[in-house]
Image (cartoon, rainbow, N blue to C red; front, side, top):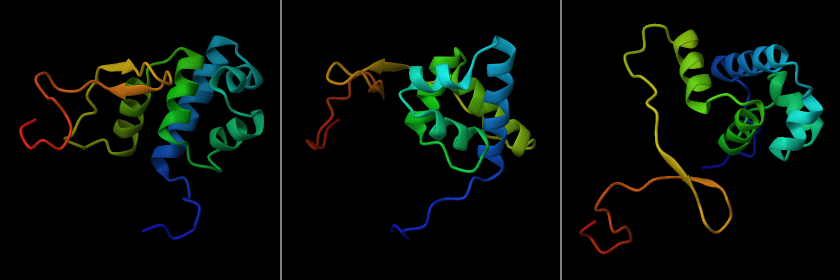
Length: 120
């Protein structure tokens, strides 16, 4: 249930921000360019990279694409750094673009007809 409170960035968010900043610097990119490519305002990007605001998954995906890094790799590195003994691994998922709006969606399992017909 929504509480009306803005989530506070935790260790995972802070590590993701640190990783993205390093990638931006390594590639010689500017935050203004990344923000424009990701469809964000420069101030929004600045806040999430400073770990003052939590990324939405769509923002993180857009920023990773704008930088040219793998979303899965960034998350996996963050999980390993924040939970070094975690037995669960982040697995690579196949995504495709929705024909309607260009957003990435998970590819449905083979043979799944979807819907609420009870057999898929």
